[in-house]
Amino acid sequence: MAILKNFGASASVTEEILVYNSDVFNHQALGSVPHFPLADEKFVTEWEGYVCELNSGAYFESLADRLVQLSFPIQSQISGTAEYTAATRRGADTRGMLSATGIRLKRPHDIRVLIHSTWAGRIPVMIVPCREDFVSLVRAFSARNEPAPIPESMGACMISGYNNWMRLRRFREEWQRTHDQSIPLREIDHHKESYQDRFLILSDGRYSGVPAERMGIPENDWLNLSLIIRREHECAHYWTRRVLGSMRNYLIDEIIADYCGMLAAMGRFQADWMLAFLGLDLYPQVREQGRVHNYRGSPVLGEDAFAIVQKLVVAAAMNLERFHEMNKHVIEAAQGSLLVLLTLTSFTLEELASEQGKQLFSTELQRKSRNLPQFRLREPGPYREDGYAKSASDAGRSGRS
Image 1 (cartoon, rainbow, N blue to C red):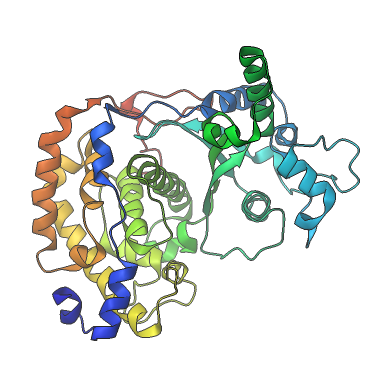
Image 2: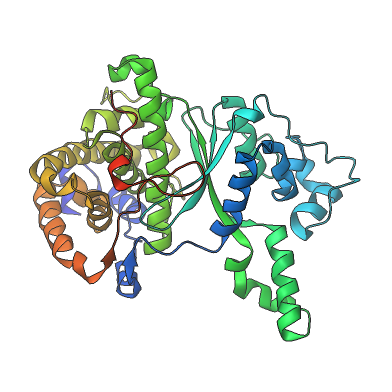
């Protein structure tokens, strides 16, 4: 409350922001983590098969047999039709369905599917070079094939809790074989790990829609860096969701994820870059298309509260740059990204913005560093397109100019 008062927040605005910035990361869950990276979730094995199939010459459209939304076009009100409901909610065979004409993509042969290694275990990734195809896939998997608006600043989407009907059918068959009976419907919800998938959809365009000229680097270099930042940003969200039980469209999550993205792409954190990503690089002016507008929470922050939150983000960015410079010998080492995740998720946005911020972070970083030996550690390494990891020496540096 004292920090918010120093930033000019009234009593009512303070209460609003404290609710928005509530700490939801469960660090007590770390007590049950034996090692990093975590073991892969069950769906990864299935997706390794998809990667191998595509690498053997199959086209992206062939995944429609596994990912049923690819069997339908993006079309207004399609999600309410009987055929769509039967296919996506009950796993009905789409062959013979009049509406299952397939998703229309402009450059499907350019889409890559791979398995990427993270501190939270490996995760499937779709890389979609064509912006229109990216929008179509996001609509298919997150908006039930409806033509929902997709912000221009959005370049990535994590699909969670995705019902993979092929996996579910196999699970049911295995249950019947081992239990000599069909699985009761009430039991299915207790075994979601056996049939639900999680995967990333990434555009390979400019990160946050920011042009290369604003970043001061050549276009090709910026596009290469953008893909790494975007990928590792989403992997940070995956880590907080799987390890600490939370992943939200809130600014504290975005700050942490952008830090991890820049660390992977450039080996450092830059406040001016993060502010450009969020549309606050000309603060107190705020870019109309800046990502910051996407993270006003639920209930939505009022104008006065949102104005204070913008101040907090700018101050937090400056603190994080100083913190990085003070501790770069630790942060830029092999396990630095894990330490950043462990450290920054321990603070609220108010604390990130406070005058004591950089010292608080440094103290916590040292404590987390001392505690790392409690985990068995090995470098996760980045992806290879056959689904297996390269050596750690190749980690996320291909985009450096």
